[in-house]
Length: 84
Image 1 (tube, rainbow, N blue to C red):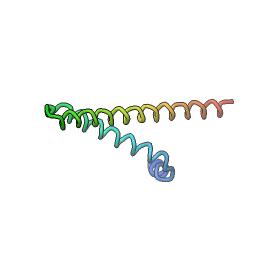
Image 2 (image 1 turned 180 degrees about the horizontal axis):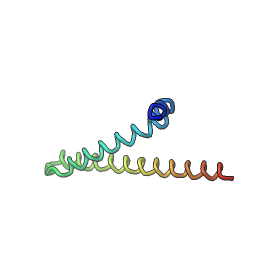
Image 3 (image 1 turned 135 degrees about the vertical axis):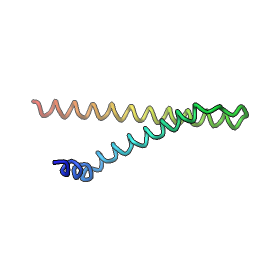
Image 4 (image 1 turned 135 degrees about the horizontal axis):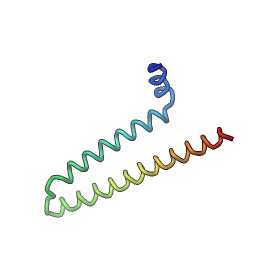
């Protein structure tokens, strides 16, 4: 039974992509939290880095939340379609 689940993930690239994107997003978020804990360099380069990295994280979180909402809508619609 466990082998069937492993094969199911490899056979469906959307599932594998979903899992890999979530893992990459979690890794980037943890790296960002660690980076934010370090003191910020007060010169112009440090401020620019802070702005760019924070904007990138905002985009990542927006895409991540949108992906989860789309997945939830997909499951809801599929469940509703099979229920009737």
